[in-house]
Length: 312
Image (spheres, rainbow, N blue to C red):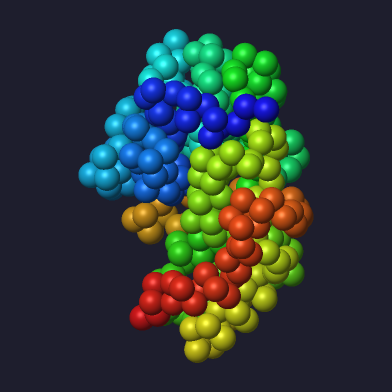
């Protein structure tokens, strides 16, 4: 059976393209792949909608950065994909048209370009995200992926749980107010993963011939709720930290004051927390541990590793 690794090994150019690298998910994956440049990859391309510090950093690391937008259409996007042997689609949530037309055009373009390898990132239970404008397009992207599979060489769908990294957006609140205030119930359970683990797991899927093309579901090692997250944070940061559920409007207003996130990102976080409330991220799966070859990072380990970010 052909794998992503065998495609890259047999190619003279050994090139890979990652979309939406102006978002943290795309950026983390491109960064992980760049560490293999010269060994598994001859060239790593990173696409973006709006240039920002993430894109600048990737350029400095040697990525070939290309601006692509949903509005560009299939032909333009497919031409860019033609530069690569393998295309990894991270949802273009930073695009102005995300939530209106979605990002299915990014998937259809892979079929048009007849790429040798296609991996698409989505969310666990994407087919149940109706009524959540920033997540609902993932269902259409998955349908487009199902249609595209027959026209590409190998294809994998990678569904991810909620990233625990979203706590970083609330670091000032945790440090100064000693509480975590989110628009989700204190007892809503979910199985969060660290974004870096997701990126490294996906990278291993692409370069290790032991991992066949299939659907992978990436989650953290354990189910938690936000009350437990606050308790863990208090232990790791040696501080009194409480959890408080607030309304969506209040949380959106808080996020709007943070420079690291704006536009679609704010509503995306709000929709993801509503998905947590619905129980859509409560599923546990061992795929990430298999890809990493070790247990994924727990909430406690994540907070311990990044403790300085959450202190005054």
